[in-house]
Length: 215
Ligand SMILES: [Zn+2]
Image 1 (spheres, rainbow, N blue to C red):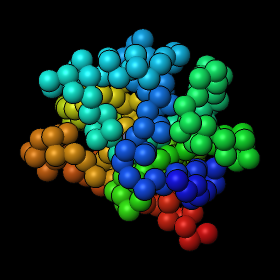
Image 2: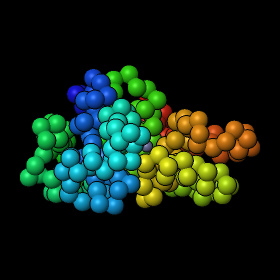
Image 3: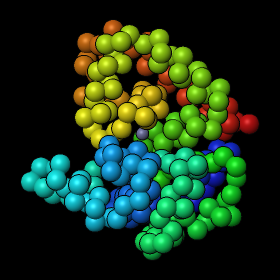
Image 4: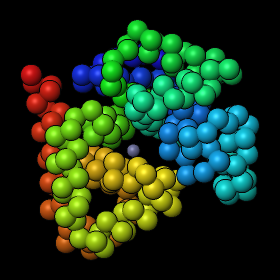
């Protein structure tokens, strides 16, 4: 696992493989945005979450470690997580969280990806910008608020069906549209008709990140 500050206060954790990544982030990520009410924002054991997740999968298989390959958590959630889970951190959580003491900044954001997962890194960076940069957030919000309802509804339904909770929908919309939508997110006809909105979002994301990279 490597840590790098890739944008002011945005910390990128890179893992050698998907298992290491997902098994490290699992409780922190679910604490932040689990679709399960009994999990999100609450203390829970790994076993409790695993049972709930498996129940909803085909043949009750626990597929989390191959379902997810990018993770993103805002700093304030990290601190809440530390408070609630410190009595039984896993070894992996300790490795994940212990550098944060030194990285301490008032407002920070962490993202976790697998080495060489370029698309995922861009998606997670979009989340980081949305949290850390107010101008970015308001530009994105404006575009999303002006999107045709049908387009937004379709994309939101896709996100809800795929395990995202309501409170992060706008953030996920901008991150998906900025860096590559999933095939089933909106239908091809709507994609063609409403492409200008997606291009606007992509443009904003690129602009902010390049500004930083070239600074
Ligand atoms: Zn996302």
